Image (tube, rainbow, N blue to C red; front, side):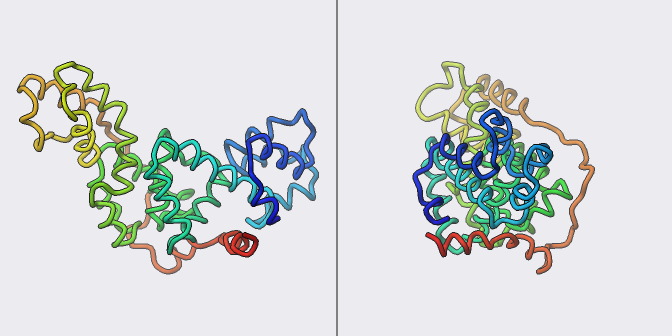
Length: 288
């Protein structure tokens, strides 16, 4: 297994190893495609096509070759696909993986191997950062409540400052650290807001100096309904009004959630779930 985990991996190699592990024929590429997109849980659709003994082993726990392969694949995707455009994101991942939050990193990676891109939304970098930071939103909370959905909706509408509404799902030190600009979450929010903010600044009169970044930073901090008060004097009154109207048009209203989370801060029993399924992390440390 150590040799498997340390080998230089390519997408083709990942696919071949998964096919070999599941004893798939060459014409069963659909199964592998689904696994690399939707994680291990997608395998349930193909239970009748896989040898029962192999299927049961693959679906049992987090100490099996399929999970290790999927974790390596998704981790590579995090670094190569998302980290390529965001160097700060690579540093953030390394801090979690190799620091005191290594267990949280392993839990989120396990979740991704199990569910694939289910929780990645349209900006995976932001989703991964939120999942790592809000450690008390564990798998049970994700499946049984709308807390993560509501968190996503809130920060993508109301910006960085709005995370204080979800303070019971994040450590106090982490919360204060992320509210300081430029934090990892602030930079992830910039990635989310960037395209629509810049589309609102296409007018030539708004293209001078570093105006794009100033507006983006303001929206990332305060959300679509920002008044841009700190940089208001950099625009003519007419341009300022047009820009605000454009930015405010992106703000959405949310329907009441069908599921609700407990109002009490997670206790030790809840926190325990965050640290489940980390035996593979201990295993990795042994084989590396």
